[in-house]
Image 1: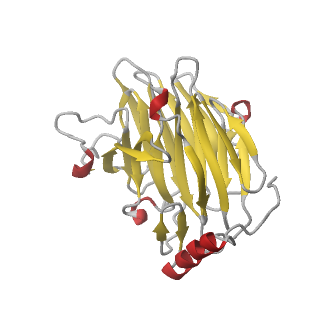
Image 2: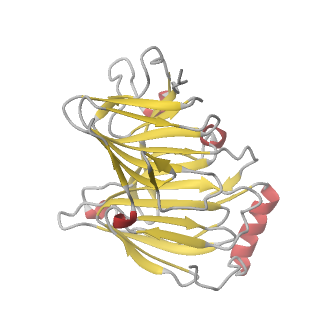
Length: 306
């Protein structure tokens, strides 16, 4: 019998400002890194008005992590200190491994209707890989396979495998699963997950039941404005963090399709020393990174990544 994962916690994304004044919603980040290990942060930067996001994210550093940007509306132009530059459009993914250090900027661009939409996930690197050379895996929408079923689900497979499809993002140390899931009303999405891996879903349209019958009790995060008795179903902007298990089962509810990101990865179980865009294992390593940033020795490679 399959051991389905129960819901451990439901968190509702909260508004925040980042970059040069971008209004976005943060599902998690900077608190309780062990709870989401190996993931550090998830931002939802969907916006209806260009003035809320057009200032973008000017030049800033990263070290010790990977940043994963997935665009669903509008576009993001980017460039970095090792010669990469380009634009990611709806359906595209940029999986950037900062490694030993990179400076880059990301500038959102609205679509014709003035909207912008996407998500950025930060994944930690283990101590053995924190000082690897930076690299990009930039994946165009057409390269991402979709696993569809007659039952009313369509799943874009960005990383990992699902429904006989394997995502184009490869060679990532945390063995991630990154899916963009659409479930029609009344349909069910089920997905096996390696026991011991961290797993969560982030809803961006519709509502649904995210746990099998008999495991609906959850710990609600009171600091993030989620009122379970009045609004029991995860909805747009809700993050569902799962406990351990072998699989998840999600039932769409309501009259609209349910859409969510489903993400899982192998925890690192390592100490985290984190300040801003730099994440290391010790405070000494963190101090070194900022000293190098001040001294102009932060960037370790001048070669353009492949």
